[in-house]
Structures are given as structure tokens and as C-alpha cells.
Length: 415
Image 1 (tube, rainbow, N blue to C red):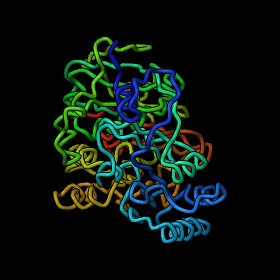
Image 2: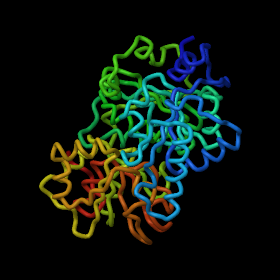
Image 3: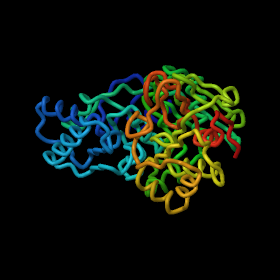
């Protein structure tokens, strides 16, 4: 019988023939800890009695949620993190370079076929390059830091086939939002989402990142794309035969296969206050808004900023709307400055911030108050995430967000 991508990755890591449902112990290739969790990881690590890291070179610490500090207690996380780094000889530290999920692939920490864990649920992002990546808690992370291993149940797989050419105003964000709506917020719980089809093959790695990032919003354990030449170029590697073979076999066992025609997709929104409350933008058109946020680990990449700039060029943000733009990394920020994208956004009236998580996690500027509405390109619209519990958050693509910023109302993007 054939294997799914996740079965192949785990089989090669464990030197077994792993099948869905089996419990195995994997050898971890890389871990990521972010600033919110480092105090708890450090405490638990020493509580467990460990005196050294299993491999300091395989541990990455990234300050992104709390940078720059917006509350007094934030600095405690920095102090504890810095002390942990010095004590255990860690070298891979990013203190203000951008969002953890952007940096893990951008900086070359993750490669096709790797098994990676991180202290954030959106660690699923790295499936964009064909890695098994998933979020864990601080106790599990402390255990990996000491042993280099982790037990997992091999996930069953839902295969998603998308064929055809997307409408010009539809992006991968619209696709993943539609899929979450079809599956429901728990429809892929502890499953692997495996993406295939010529639409997927035509996507950039950045677009695949958006989809892998939001797989967790349907409960998925991971999301996987077959590595290809785009992956190789992005990762600056030459794909091996094993990496090229990370594709679902024809005879593989899937718990569900979902087939889509690209031309059937339309711009959509995740409406307040659940990620699976999906509606076409056309159904909400005309709803007045107060703010727009373009950024996050979901849609803060250069192609996202380009999309927004294409729509905003020569236009102005509505006078009563705040448009906040937050690049996902320092590299992206610099590239957007160099190619003129930032000038276009600035001239349109955008407030451009430092790279980081920012408003997505309700910190470092831009929070809203009772009765206000925001159209945002991040991954969650839960009550209280961007201000008070009476703020309404609509999740959208960068194209839709930019169009809304111009009109001050929910608007169908034209591209």
C-alpha cells in the first residue's frame, strides 16, 4: 500500500514503515521557542533535571510577540530568555528580526522532510516546504530540549485537490478560509492536510505558507505541500530524490479527499467571531469599518505587500480609517523599501510598523475598542484578540483588506 506525505516523513525519520494511528518516537530536527513561552520552558527544563541541551544548534529562540515591550512584565521574558541562552550556549537567537514562523523558513532553519516543533500553534506553517511541523506546549518542549525526541501519533490525512486557474481577485488566503469553512473549526482535528493539484503547484511558497499557517484553524496537526523547484529556490538547496518523493502515493489511504475547481473560488471573509464563519465578501459589502491590518505570519510577506500596493497605488486610505501595515520580517521590510512598495503604502496613508506579531496578538499598537470593526489579514478573529470583546474582526486576504482601506467599507477587491 502507498503512503501519504506525513507517513513518508515519519517513516524515514524513525526507519520504520509508519502508518496512520501508530504511536512512534521521532528524532526532532529543529525546535522553535518564542518569547511568550521561554520563561515557562526554562523553568520546566530545569525542573525536569536536565543540565544541558540535547543539541544547542537545533534550538531557535525568537522574540516576536513582545517586541518592543508594551507591558512592564514583557521585559521579564527577555531577561529569562537571555539568561537561558547564555547558560546553555544557544546561538540561534532573533531579538527583533521578525515573526517566528517567517524566520524559521526564511533563515533556513527548516528543510523538506524535517520534523520540527514550536511553542506556537501556527508552527504548522513550515509544511509549506514539505516539513512536518506542529505546535506543542512548554512541558513537551522542555522534554525535547533534554532528549531530542518526541512521541507522536501518526496523523490520518485529508487530501485537498485544487485544479484550474484562480480568478484574478482570489488568493490562497481565500482558499484556506473557504476550506476552513467547509471543514469547520474541528473538522481536521489531529489530521494532516495534504495539498495537491495544478493550482497548488502553481502557487508561490509564500502562498503555500498562508495555507499551511491556517491549517490549525481547522484543527489540523500539520499541513503538507510536496517540495518542488520553487521550494528548492526558496530554501536555497538542491532537492534530493527523497525530498522530491514527498508526494502522496496513488494507493495511499486517506480519510477524506476534497476536490475543488479553482474558478469556483471567490473572495471571502471569516466573520466575527469564529474562523469558520465564512461568507463571500459580496454578502458583507458595504459594512463600515474603522481599521485595516495587513501583516502577521499569515499574510505579512513581500507578495502580500505587493498585492496591497497594487490596489492602493495612486489612491488614499479613507480619512476615518487607520491602515496598519506590519511586515513579517526585517528582510521583507527592507525588500519592500528597496522596490518602492513601502513608499506606495506610505503615500496612500498607511501606518507602517516594525516587523513582528503586533496587532495580531493584540499588542504594540492598534488595539480597538467597543463597537469598532477591523478587516485583518491574520489568522484568528476570536473575541478580545485585538482589543475589547466588543470589537468585530473580519479576516480577509491582503487584496480585500486593501480595497476596504480605500472605501472605509467591506469591498470586493478588483485586480
